[in-house]
Image 1: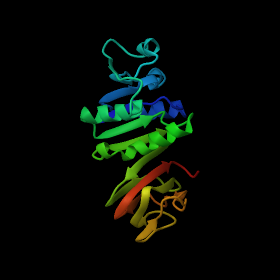
Image 2: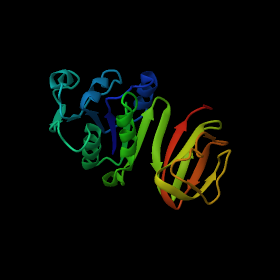
Image 3: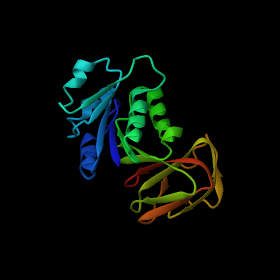
Length: 214
């Protein structure tokens, strides 16, 4: 089951996002509080809006008679996006795409990205779409990255060192090496074929794929 979550950040390259969304068959579309305002721009129909609804009257105009509003108190431990992610997982989603997760407040952008490593969401593939760019986490033992020659692929360890990394199909290869948390060694690699394979034995890698050379 595939879920789309609209987040209250910057809606970067909305035309590109609209086209990407059109090619997918999302089973569930959620608004993380004021992210619901992007529903019209992206030509999607909201199934539910999750949040504290400090602007409920404004949010209601973006839904339909069938849109569910799942309310939480303003003072809570989780962000509206975290609650939306957990809601999607509870509904049976095993792939979740977030749009509008970046921009504006730096702390919220970083927190939104780190949510893709949430312990309770380990069974879900969570993607961040930022225009043409896609970010997601690779866990051991690794996976393939499809694309085209010249695409940019960046590998960033999350939460500590990522170890036992071997890459195939990238211009700058790694063979059973580590990427420590902090240094930017894994930035701006390039696909040399139609796909690459990333193998790792420990840790987490944030992958950011950008079509075309950037």
